[in-house]
Length: 366
Ligand SMILES: NC(=O)c1ccc[n+]([C@@H]2O[C@H](COP(=O)([O-])OP(=O)(O)OC[C@H]3O[C@@H](n4cnc5c(N)ncnc54)[C@H](O)[C@@H]3O)[C@@H](O)[C@H]2O)c1
Image (cartoon, rainbow, N blue to C red; front, side):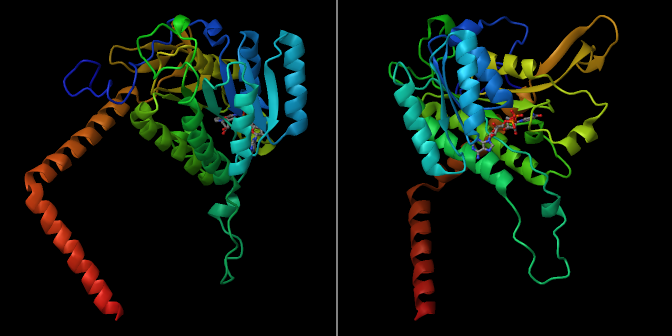
Protein backbone atom coordinates (compact mmCIF):
# COMPACT_ATOMS: atom_id res chain seq x y z
CA UNK A 1 0.00 0.00 0.00
CA UNK A 2 1.23 3.48 -0.72
CA UNK A 3 0.34 6.73 0.89
CA UNK A 4 1.27 10.31 0.15
CA UNK A 5 4.99 10.78 0.55
CA UNK A 6 5.88 7.06 0.67
CA UNK A 7 8.29 5.58 -1.84
CA UNK A 8 6.63 4.98 -5.21
CA UNK A 9 3.61 7.06 -4.26
CA UNK A 10 1.74 8.42 -7.23
CA UNK A 11 -0.78 10.39 -5.24
CA UNK A 12 0.64 13.71 -6.43
CA UNK A 13 1.11 12.55 -10.01
CA UNK A 14 -2.37 11.14 -10.45
CA UNK A 15 -4.01 14.11 -8.71
CA UNK A 16 -5.56 11.92 -6.07
CA UNK A 17 -6.19 13.41 -2.66
CA UNK A 18 -5.70 11.17 0.39
CA UNK A 19 -8.50 8.79 1.46
CA UNK A 20 -11.42 10.81 2.75
CA UNK A 21 -12.15 11.37 6.39
CA UNK A 22 -15.93 11.14 6.14
CA UNK A 23 -16.31 12.32 9.73
CA UNK A 24 -14.50 15.57 8.93
CA UNK A 25 -17.04 18.36 8.58
CA UNK A 26 -17.40 20.31 5.35
CA UNK A 27 -19.44 23.43 4.71
CA UNK A 28 -22.14 23.12 1.99
CA UNK A 29 -22.01 26.92 1.77
CA UNK A 30 -18.71 26.53 -0.11
CA UNK A 31 -20.92 26.01 -3.22
CA UNK A 32 -22.23 29.60 -2.98
CA UNK A 33 -21.83 31.61 -6.18
CA UNK A 34 -20.52 28.62 -8.13
CA UNK A 35 -22.23 27.33 -11.28
CA UNK A 36 -23.33 23.69 -11.46
CA UNK A 37 -24.44 21.86 -14.57
CA UNK A 38 -26.38 18.63 -13.99
CA UNK A 39 -27.54 16.22 -16.69
CA UNK A 40 -30.72 14.29 -15.90
CA UNK A 41 -31.54 16.92 -13.28
CA UNK A 42 -35.34 16.76 -13.48
CA UNK A 43 -35.73 13.82 -11.12
CA UNK A 44 -34.09 11.70 -8.41
CA UNK A 45 -30.50 12.55 -7.43
CA UNK A 46 -30.20 15.41 -9.93
CA UNK A 47 -33.32 17.12 -8.56
CA UNK A 48 -32.09 16.60 -4.98
CA UNK A 49 -28.67 18.12 -5.83
CA UNK A 50 -30.44 21.08 -7.44
CA UNK A 51 -32.49 21.73 -4.29
CA UNK A 52 -29.57 21.38 -1.86
CA UNK A 53 -27.15 23.54 -3.86
CA UNK A 54 -29.83 26.14 -4.62
CA UNK A 55 -30.48 26.48 -0.87
CA UNK A 56 -26.81 27.33 -0.43
CA UNK A 57 -26.72 30.05 -3.08
CA UNK A 58 -25.30 28.13 -6.05
CA UNK A 59 -26.27 28.76 -9.68
CA UNK A 60 -27.62 25.52 -11.15
CA UNK A 61 -28.51 24.60 -14.72
CA UNK A 62 -30.20 21.24 -15.20
CA UNK A 63 -30.61 19.46 -18.53
CA UNK A 64 -33.10 16.67 -19.13
CA UNK A 65 -35.40 15.15 -21.76
CA UNK A 66 -38.28 15.63 -19.32
CA UNK A 67 -39.23 19.21 -20.26
CA UNK A 68 -42.41 19.46 -18.19
CA UNK A 69 -40.80 17.93 -15.08
CA UNK A 70 -37.64 20.04 -15.41
CA UNK A 71 -39.52 23.31 -15.94
CA UNK A 72 -41.88 22.69 -13.01
CA UNK A 73 -39.06 21.62 -10.70
CA UNK A 74 -36.97 24.73 -11.38
CA UNK A 75 -40.00 26.98 -10.87
CA UNK A 76 -40.79 25.27 -7.54
CA UNK A 77 -37.21 25.41 -6.19
CA UNK A 78 -36.93 29.08 -7.22
CA UNK A 79 -40.06 29.81 -5.16
CA UNK A 80 -38.95 27.73 -2.20
CA UNK A 81 -35.39 29.10 -2.01
CA UNK A 82 -35.74 32.57 -3.51
CA UNK A 83 -32.70 31.69 -5.67
CA UNK A 84 -33.40 32.90 -9.22
CA UNK A 85 -30.14 31.55 -10.72
CA UNK A 86 -31.71 28.17 -11.45
CA UNK A 87 -32.52 27.10 -14.99
CA UNK A 88 -33.83 24.19 -17.01
CA UNK A 89 -32.59 23.52 -20.54
CA UNK A 90 -33.79 20.64 -22.70
CA UNK A 91 -30.97 18.17 -23.26
CA UNK A 92 -30.86 14.66 -24.63
CA UNK A 93 -27.49 13.29 -23.51
CA UNK A 94 -27.45 10.72 -26.34
CA UNK A 95 -27.46 13.55 -28.89
CA UNK A 96 -24.07 15.29 -29.28
CA UNK A 97 -25.50 18.53 -30.66
CA UNK A 98 -28.11 18.66 -27.90
CA UNK A 99 -25.32 18.48 -25.30
CA UNK A 100 -23.21 21.07 -27.17
CA UNK A 101 -26.19 23.47 -27.06
CA UNK A 102 -26.87 22.63 -23.39
CA UNK A 103 -23.32 23.56 -22.34
CA UNK A 104 -23.39 26.76 -24.43
CA UNK A 105 -26.70 27.77 -22.85
CA UNK A 106 -25.36 26.98 -19.37
CA UNK A 107 -22.34 29.22 -19.92
CA UNK A 108 -24.64 32.05 -21.12
CA UNK A 109 -26.92 31.59 -18.08
CA UNK A 110 -24.02 31.47 -15.61
CA UNK A 111 -23.69 34.83 -13.79
CA UNK A 112 -19.88 34.62 -13.98
CA UNK A 113 -19.77 33.20 -17.51
CA UNK A 114 -18.28 29.82 -16.62
CA UNK A 115 -19.00 26.37 -15.19
CA UNK A 116 -17.49 25.19 -11.88
CA UNK A 117 -18.89 21.66 -11.61
CA UNK A 118 -20.42 19.30 -14.15
CA UNK A 119 -22.41 16.35 -12.81
CA UNK A 120 -22.72 13.54 -15.39
CA UNK A 121 -25.84 12.10 -13.80
CA UNK A 122 -28.44 11.22 -16.47
CA UNK A 123 -29.09 7.51 -16.54
CA UNK A 124 -31.65 4.80 -17.19
CA UNK A 125 -31.98 1.23 -15.92
CA UNK A 126 -34.21 -0.56 -18.39
CA UNK A 127 -34.66 -4.32 -18.07
CA UNK A 128 -32.43 -6.01 -20.63
CA UNK A 129 -33.37 -9.69 -20.39
CA UNK A 130 -33.82 -9.47 -24.16
CA UNK A 131 -30.08 -8.88 -24.43
CA UNK A 132 -29.07 -11.83 -22.29
CA UNK A 133 -31.68 -14.25 -23.65
CA UNK A 134 -32.13 -13.22 -27.30
CA UNK A 135 -35.57 -13.91 -28.74
CA UNK A 136 -35.86 -15.93 -31.91
CA UNK A 137 -33.09 -18.46 -31.20
CA UNK A 138 -34.59 -20.64 -33.94
CA UNK A 139 -34.12 -17.92 -36.53
CA UNK A 140 -30.89 -17.32 -38.41
CA UNK A 141 -31.13 -13.57 -37.88
CA UNK A 142 -31.21 -12.65 -34.21
CA UNK A 143 -32.86 -9.28 -33.55
CA UNK A 144 -30.59 -6.29 -33.06
CA UNK A 145 -30.28 -5.70 -29.30
CA UNK A 146 -31.63 -2.52 -27.74
CA UNK A 147 -28.55 -0.68 -26.47
CA UNK A 148 -30.32 2.43 -25.16
CA UNK A 149 -28.83 1.82 -21.68
CA UNK A 150 -25.33 2.07 -23.17
CA UNK A 151 -26.35 5.10 -25.25
CA UNK A 152 -27.58 7.06 -22.22
CA UNK A 153 -25.34 5.77 -19.42
CA UNK A 154 -22.06 5.52 -21.31
CA UNK A 155 -22.12 7.39 -24.63
CA UNK A 156 -24.08 10.20 -22.94
CA UNK A 157 -21.53 10.36 -20.10
CA UNK A 158 -18.65 10.37 -22.60
CA UNK A 159 -20.20 13.34 -24.47
CA UNK A 160 -20.78 15.12 -21.14
CA UNK A 161 -17.19 14.44 -20.05
CA UNK A 162 -15.72 15.66 -23.33
CA UNK A 163 -17.70 18.90 -23.12
CA UNK A 164 -16.99 19.28 -19.40
CA UNK A 165 -13.22 19.09 -19.97
CA UNK A 166 -13.58 21.73 -22.68
CA UNK A 167 -15.63 24.18 -20.61
CA UNK A 168 -14.18 23.63 -17.12
CA UNK A 169 -10.71 24.58 -18.30
CA UNK A 170 -12.23 27.79 -19.70
CA UNK A 171 -13.97 28.77 -16.47
CA UNK A 172 -13.00 32.45 -16.07
CA UNK A 173 -10.67 33.15 -13.11
CA UNK A 174 -10.42 29.46 -12.22
CA UNK A 175 -7.06 27.87 -11.44
CA UNK A 176 -5.86 24.32 -12.03
CA UNK A 177 -7.00 22.18 -9.09
CA UNK A 178 -4.92 22.62 -5.97
CA UNK A 179 -5.19 20.04 -3.21
CA UNK A 180 -4.09 22.49 -0.54
CA UNK A 181 -6.16 25.63 -1.20
CA UNK A 182 -8.92 26.24 1.34
CA UNK A 183 -12.36 25.63 -0.22
CA UNK A 184 -13.60 28.76 1.55
CA UNK A 185 -11.15 30.86 -0.48
CA UNK A 186 -11.72 29.11 -3.84
CA UNK A 187 -14.29 31.19 -5.71
CA UNK A 188 -14.00 29.19 -8.94
CA UNK A 189 -13.61 25.46 -9.46
CA UNK A 190 -12.98 22.90 -12.22
CA UNK A 191 -14.79 19.76 -11.17
CA UNK A 192 -16.32 16.77 -12.95
CA UNK A 193 -18.51 14.47 -10.85
CA UNK A 194 -19.34 11.16 -12.53
CA UNK A 195 -22.36 9.25 -11.27
CA UNK A 196 -21.56 5.55 -11.37
CA UNK A 197 -23.23 2.88 -9.27
CA UNK A 198 -22.34 -0.11 -7.13
CA UNK A 199 -22.75 -1.78 -10.55
CA UNK A 200 -19.53 0.10 -11.48
CA UNK A 201 -17.70 -2.14 -9.02
CA UNK A 202 -19.48 -5.48 -9.24
CA UNK A 203 -21.84 -7.57 -11.38
CA UNK A 204 -25.57 -6.92 -11.75
CA UNK A 205 -27.17 -10.20 -12.90
CA UNK A 206 -30.08 -9.58 -15.25
CA UNK A 207 -28.86 -6.05 -15.98
CA UNK A 208 -25.68 -6.80 -17.92
CA UNK A 209 -25.95 -3.65 -20.04
CA UNK A 210 -26.41 -1.47 -16.98
CA UNK A 211 -23.37 -3.06 -15.31
CA UNK A 212 -21.36 -2.72 -18.54
CA UNK A 213 -22.28 0.97 -18.83
CA UNK A 214 -21.44 1.70 -15.19
CA UNK A 215 -18.17 -0.29 -15.35
CA UNK A 216 -17.38 1.99 -18.30
CA UNK A 217 -17.99 5.05 -16.10
CA UNK A 218 -15.61 3.59 -13.50
CA UNK A 219 -12.90 2.99 -16.13
CA UNK A 220 -13.40 6.54 -17.34
CA UNK A 221 -13.00 7.89 -13.80
CA UNK A 222 -9.89 5.86 -13.04
CA UNK A 223 -8.22 6.89 -16.28
CA UNK A 224 -9.23 10.55 -16.27
CA UNK A 225 -8.06 11.28 -12.78
CA UNK A 226 -4.46 10.83 -13.86
CA UNK A 227 -4.76 12.74 -17.14
CA UNK A 228 -7.08 15.66 -16.43
CA UNK A 229 -4.03 17.27 -14.85
CA UNK A 230 -3.65 18.76 -18.35
CA UNK A 231 -6.84 20.75 -17.83
CA UNK A 232 -6.39 21.19 -14.07
CA UNK A 233 -9.75 19.48 -13.53
CA UNK A 234 -10.59 17.39 -10.47
CA UNK A 235 -12.62 14.24 -11.14
CA UNK A 236 -14.63 12.26 -8.59
CA UNK A 237 -17.19 9.46 -8.75
CA UNK A 238 -20.32 8.54 -6.79
CA UNK A 239 -21.42 4.91 -6.65
CA UNK A 240 -24.88 4.67 -5.06
CA UNK A 241 -26.49 1.40 -4.04
CA UNK A 242 -30.28 1.03 -4.65
CA UNK A 243 -32.07 4.22 -3.65
CA UNK A 244 -35.80 4.80 -4.12
CA UNK A 245 -36.02 7.12 -7.12
CA UNK A 246 -38.17 6.81 -10.26
CA UNK A 247 -35.23 4.86 -11.78
CA UNK A 248 -36.19 1.83 -9.71
CA UNK A 249 -38.95 0.07 -11.65
CA UNK A 250 -41.87 -1.76 -10.02
CA UNK A 251 -40.36 -5.26 -10.65
CA UNK A 252 -37.06 -4.05 -9.15
CA UNK A 253 -38.93 -2.71 -6.11
CA UNK A 254 -40.59 -6.12 -5.74
CA UNK A 255 -37.23 -7.87 -5.96
CA UNK A 256 -35.83 -5.49 -3.35
CA UNK A 257 -38.74 -5.95 -0.91
CA UNK A 258 -37.33 -6.53 2.56
CA UNK A 259 -33.80 -5.45 1.59
CA UNK A 260 -32.11 -2.40 3.08
CA UNK A 261 -31.77 0.43 0.56
CA UNK A 262 -29.83 3.68 0.49
CA UNK A 263 -31.29 7.09 1.25
CA UNK A 264 -31.32 10.00 -1.17
CA UNK A 265 -30.11 12.39 1.56
CA UNK A 266 -26.92 10.32 1.97
CA UNK A 267 -26.29 10.49 -1.79
CA UNK A 268 -26.83 14.26 -1.65
CA UNK A 269 -24.49 14.53 1.34
CA UNK A 270 -21.70 12.60 -0.42
CA UNK A 271 -22.22 14.57 -3.66
CA UNK A 272 -22.23 17.87 -1.79
CA UNK A 273 -18.96 16.99 -0.03
CA UNK A 274 -17.40 16.44 -3.48
CA UNK A 275 -18.99 19.59 -4.88
CA UNK A 276 -18.08 21.85 -1.95
CA UNK A 277 -14.64 20.65 -0.91
CA UNK A 278 -12.32 21.64 -3.74
CA UNK A 279 -9.45 19.70 -2.14
CA UNK A 280 -11.05 16.33 -3.00
CA UNK A 281 -9.73 14.89 -6.21
CA UNK A 282 -9.71 11.43 -7.76
CA UNK A 283 -11.87 9.76 -5.10
CA UNK A 284 -14.92 7.49 -5.33
CA UNK A 285 -17.66 7.04 -2.74
CA UNK A 286 -20.20 4.24 -2.39
CA UNK A 287 -23.50 5.23 -0.77
CA UNK A 288 -25.41 2.33 0.75
CA UNK A 289 -28.00 1.71 3.46
CA UNK A 290 -27.19 3.31 6.79
CA UNK A 291 -25.91 0.53 9.07
CA UNK A 292 -24.61 0.39 12.61
CA UNK A 293 -21.05 -0.92 12.46
CA UNK A 294 -17.92 -1.35 14.48
CA UNK A 295 -14.39 -1.80 13.14
CA UNK A 296 -12.72 -4.96 14.45
CA UNK A 297 -9.03 -5.29 15.28
CA UNK A 298 -8.31 -6.92 11.89
CA UNK A 299 -9.71 -3.81 10.16
CA UNK A 300 -12.94 -5.52 8.97
CA UNK A 301 -16.31 -3.93 9.75
CA UNK A 302 -19.00 -5.84 11.65
CA UNK A 303 -22.70 -5.06 12.07
CA UNK A 304 -23.62 -4.39 15.69
CA UNK A 305 -26.97 -3.78 17.36
CA UNK A 306 -25.66 -1.55 20.16
CA UNK A 307 -22.92 1.08 20.21
CA UNK A 308 -20.83 1.41 17.04
CA UNK A 309 -21.45 4.15 14.52
CA UNK A 310 -24.03 4.76 11.78
CA UNK A 311 -22.35 4.59 8.38
CA UNK A 312 -23.93 4.96 4.92
CA UNK A 313 -20.98 6.22 2.87
CA UNK A 314 -17.88 4.14 2.17
CA UNK A 315 -14.78 4.70 0.14
CA UNK A 316 -14.27 1.61 -2.05
CA UNK A 317 -10.86 0.29 -2.94
CA UNK A 318 -9.19 3.52 -1.91
CA UNK A 319 -5.84 1.81 -1.56
CA UNK A 320 -6.47 -0.65 -4.34
CA UNK A 321 -6.65 2.29 -6.74
CA UNK A 322 -3.32 3.54 -5.49
CA UNK A 323 -1.69 0.14 -5.83
CA UNK A 324 -3.21 -0.36 -9.26
CA UNK A 325 -1.94 3.01 -10.45
CA UNK A 326 1.48 2.21 -8.99
CA UNK A 327 1.43 -1.09 -10.86
CA UNK A 328 0.54 0.69 -14.11
CA UNK A 329 3.22 3.29 -13.53
CA UNK A 330 5.83 0.58 -12.85
CA UNK A 331 4.82 -1.32 -15.99
CA UNK A 332 5.06 1.83 -18.10
CA UNK A 333 8.35 2.70 -16.38
CA UNK A 334 9.74 -0.72 -17.32
CA UNK A 335 8.51 -0.43 -20.90
CA UNK A 336 10.06 3.03 -21.21
CA UNK A 337 13.34 1.74 -19.75
CA UNK A 338 13.34 -1.12 -22.28
CA UNK A 339 12.72 1.39 -25.09
CA UNK A 340 15.57 3.61 -23.85
CA UNK A 341 17.88 0.57 -23.66
CA UNK A 342 17.16 -0.25 -27.32
CA UNK A 343 17.98 3.38 -28.18
CA UNK A 344 18.25 4.74 -31.73
CA UNK A 345 19.33 1.33 -33.05
CA UNK A 346 16.04 -0.17 -31.85
CA UNK A 347 14.10 2.70 -33.40
CA UNK A 348 15.76 2.35 -36.82
CA UNK A 349 15.43 -1.45 -36.72
CA UNK A 350 11.68 -1.13 -36.07
CA UNK A 351 11.34 1.53 -38.76
CA UNK A 352 12.98 -0.75 -41.36
CA UNK A 353 10.70 -3.54 -40.12
CA UNK A 354 7.61 -1.37 -40.72
CA UNK A 355 8.87 -0.35 -44.17
CA UNK A 356 9.44 -4.02 -45.05
CA UNK A 357 5.95 -4.92 -43.81
CA UNK A 358 4.37 -2.15 -45.89
CA UNK A 359 6.33 -3.18 -48.97
CA UNK A 360 5.25 -6.81 -48.57
CA UNK A 361 1.58 -5.74 -48.15
CA UNK A 362 1.84 -3.55 -51.25
CA UNK A 363 3.43 -6.36 -53.30
CA UNK A 364 0.65 -8.75 -52.18
CA UNK A 365 -1.94 -6.31 -53.54
CA UNK A 366 -0.22 -6.12 -56.97
N1 LIG B 1 -31.58 5.19 -7.89
C1 LIG B 1 -30.65 4.27 -7.73
O1 LIG B 1 -30.84 3.28 -7.02
C2 LIG B 1 -29.31 4.43 -8.39
C3 LIG B 1 -28.27 3.60 -7.94
C4 LIG B 1 -27.02 3.72 -8.53
C5 LIG B 1 -26.81 4.66 -9.52
N2 LIG B 1 -27.83 5.45 -9.94
C6 LIG B 1 -27.54 6.41 -11.02
O2 LIG B 1 -27.88 7.70 -10.61
C7 LIG B 1 -28.20 8.49 -11.76
C8 LIG B 1 -29.50 9.23 -11.50
O3 LIG B 1 -30.51 8.27 -11.32
P1 LIG B 1 -31.82 8.53 -10.45
O4 LIG B 1 -31.93 7.39 -9.50
O5 LIG B 1 -31.83 9.91 -9.95
O6 LIG B 1 -32.91 8.26 -11.59
P2 LIG B 1 -34.13 9.15 -12.10
O7 LIG B 1 -34.86 8.29 -13.08
O8 LIG B 1 -34.90 9.70 -10.96
O9 LIG B 1 -33.40 10.36 -12.85
C9 LIG B 1 -32.73 10.18 -14.05
C10 LIG B 1 -33.01 11.38 -14.93
O10 LIG B 1 -32.29 11.20 -16.15
C11 LIG B 1 -33.13 11.67 -17.19
N3 LIG B 1 -32.75 11.08 -18.48
C12 LIG B 1 -32.98 9.84 -18.93
N4 LIG B 1 -32.54 9.73 -20.20
C13 LIG B 1 -32.03 10.94 -20.54
C14 LIG B 1 -31.43 11.46 -21.71
N5 LIG B 1 -31.29 10.71 -22.82
N6 LIG B 1 -31.00 12.73 -21.70
C15 LIG B 1 -31.15 13.51 -20.60
N7 LIG B 1 -31.74 13.09 -19.47
C16 LIG B 1 -32.17 11.81 -19.44
C17 LIG B 1 -34.53 11.25 -16.77
O11 LIG B 1 -35.53 11.99 -17.47
C18 LIG B 1 -34.48 11.54 -15.29
O12 LIG B 1 -34.91 12.87 -15.02
C19 LIG B 1 -28.24 7.53 -12.93
O13 LIG B 1 -27.04 7.61 -13.66
C20 LIG B 1 -28.36 6.17 -12.27
O14 LIG B 1 -27.84 5.14 -13.07
C21 LIG B 1 -29.08 5.36 -9.39
